[in-house]
Image (cartoon, rainbow, N blue to C red; front, side, top):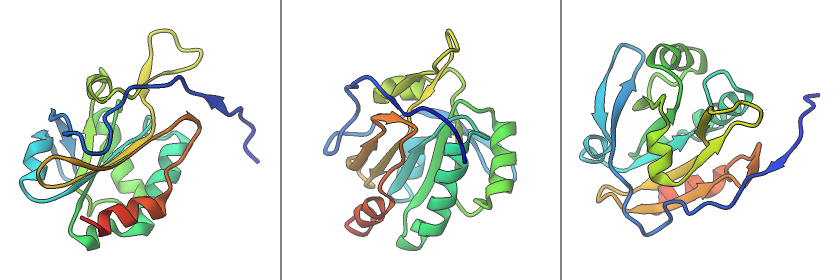
Length: 171
């Protein structure tokens, strides 16, 4: 059994349902390569499920990706992309280990600027000056409007995967 404390996270003024998803450009790693890609580039191909997650290798990241693989959201015609502070090298390893080669890829945002734009910065407890995005899921329609938003209120916290799937079905 894993022994850890559940910590309440401070309130945040994050991007919410009905708002426009802020566009960004970051390296998007796939199982073959990485290149700078804008969120708007993905949206030009259809709706996107954007999963903000902790550093690659952290147990919440492993658990969240396993749940997303099991959901099979790409079968609904959406692209699933992750985003964390991990490097493209770490993302390539995570893609291989988690069996998520079929997804859009993982955005690398080491400076955590995208999380700041979305209002979901998480200062890592006990690590002065180190931050990452708090876990969050955004279902974004092809027009760039957030159709569904979930943001963690405690650490660790996990999305309601059935609610994410329902939001995708309603696109």
